[in-house]
Picture (spheres, rainbow, N blue to C red):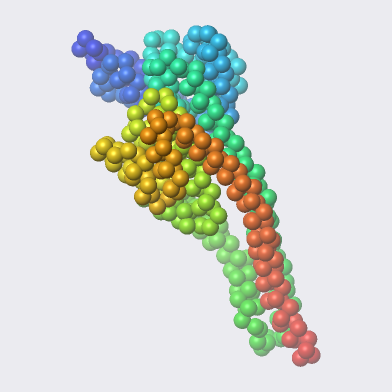
Length: 405
C-alpha cells in the first residue's frame, strides 16, 4: 500500500513524497531508517478494488513459499551472486502474486541503497522480527548466506512440526465431525418421529422416563429454535476470537491450554524446541541476549511462557545469567536451564541449545504420533455414548409400554 508523507530530511528541508509499505507503522520505520523525520504519514488508498477479498494483494504468503525463497536466496548469495540480482531472479520465479509484490518492493529498496534488513522490515506480514533481526546481524557480520541457511532450517523444522500435528489431528477431527453430524441428525430427524410413536403407543396420559423426556425436549428445542443455536454459536465464536485477541484473553486461553492433559505436554515441548532453536540462531548471529530473549518470547505464541521469558530478561538486565532465573521456571523443565548453564560456562550456548532443540523436536514427533492413537478411541467412545443415550431414551419407554400391553 502507498503512503503519502511529509517529512524533514537530514539537511532540515521539508520534503513531500510517497512510500510503499505494509502499514503506517512500517512506513514510518522505513522513513526513519533513511534518516528522514516524518511529520505525517497517511494512506493514499488503492480504490475499492484493492480492498476486495479476492484480490491478489490479500493472498497469504505460505510458510513453504518463504522457506523456498530463503533457501534459494542463501544458495545464490553463497555462490557469489549479488543480492539485487538474486532478488530479481527470485521475484521472476515466484508464482504467488502477493509474495512477488513484496519481493519487488524489497528489491527496489535495496537497489535504492537501503539495507536488506530495513527493506524486509517494511513487510512485517511476511518477514517476522526474527527473520529481520537475523538478516540484520548477518549483514553486519558479513555472513548473510549462513544466516539465511539457518533461517531456512528453522522454517523447515517449524513446517515439519506443523505437518506432523496436522496429520495426527486429521482422523480425530473427521471422527468428531461425523459424531456431531450423527448426533444432530438423530436429534433433528429421528428423535421427533420416535417420540411421536412412543406418545401414540402410550396415549396422552402416558408417563415417560426422565431421560426420554429430556431427550425429547432437547430435540424439540433443536428443531424449533435452531436459529437461536446457530446465532448463539456464531456470536460465541466471534466473542471468543475477540477476547483471545486481547493480551489478557490470550493469556487466559494459554493458561487453560497448559492445564489440559497431553495437550499441555505438546505445547511445552513445541515451545521449548522453538525457543532453543530460535534463541540459538539469534545468539550465533550476534544478537545480544536481552534482544534475543524478547524476540524469541514473542515468537513462541504462548503468553504464559512469554511472561516467564520476559521476567528472565529483566534478571539478565540486572546482571544475572539467563540460566539462573530459568532454573526457577514453573513451565520450562530443569534440563533447559541446566543446558543453558553449561553453554554459558563453555561459551557454546548456541551449539548446546541446538542439541536441546533436536531432542525436543524428536519428543514432539513421538507425542504427536501417539496423540492420534489416544484420541481415536476417545472419539469412538463419545460417538457410541451419544448414540447409546438416544437409543436408551427410546428403547426404555417402548419396552415398558410393550410389557404393559
